[in-house]
Length: 94
Image (cartoon, rainbow, N blue to C red):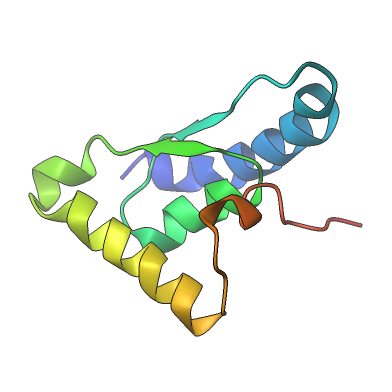
């Protein structure tokens, strides 16, 4: 679980990259590292990631990816979000 504390560094970095670089050159961002559930995936997405990579979670839980997809779908239904693209970069930092 070494990657979990690193998430606190990854999210600000992902959002900073999205805010400055992506809005200039339009390079898609892929969130990687420590994604174990839908909440982790959603956090990367609202920070600007267009996709997420799930690795180690598959060893811990072979159904990790379907559960992450279901969790994202559930979040979108609960929050009346019709398109997943509306999540990407939706974080408003002050």
